[in-house]
Image (cartoon, rainbow, N blue to C red):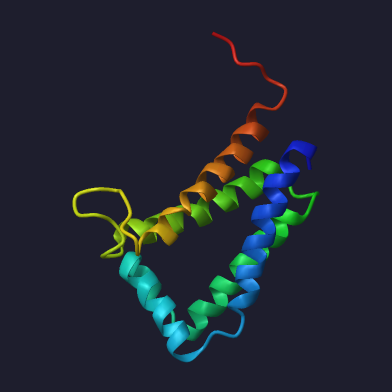
Amino acid sequence: MKLAHLPLRVSIGAYVLNSGLGKRNLEGAAAEGMHGMAVAAMPQLGQFEPARFAKLLSYSEIALGAALLAPFVPAPLVGLGLTAFGAGLVQLYLKTPGMREPGSVRPTQQGTGLAKDIWLVGAGLTLVLEGLTHGRRWHR
């Protein structure tokens, strides 16, 4: 892990890991609510039962958080995972009714919590691009 990646990977990794750990035991109404919101944005997730979906989401977040914290996981690889995860959250924001102002991508007050997840996509792409361009100089 490059020293310059440390603040980004540790802060996001700890956040995502904690989020995953917090979802480990979701059941009942909490799992159903999370599942319902996800299915509204991505109907293919309807094939999972709510408790199973919550477990898979929890395990995915734990794995991603741990990969971000692990110094031996290459930046482009962990960046791809982070980009995909962030893109899923952005899709949730864009497709969930009430999250955006009508006819706009600007968030409503209710949507601000999801809209902010765009930073995960930016951070992931930064890790991917930096890893792919490492040692190369930009030429005109």
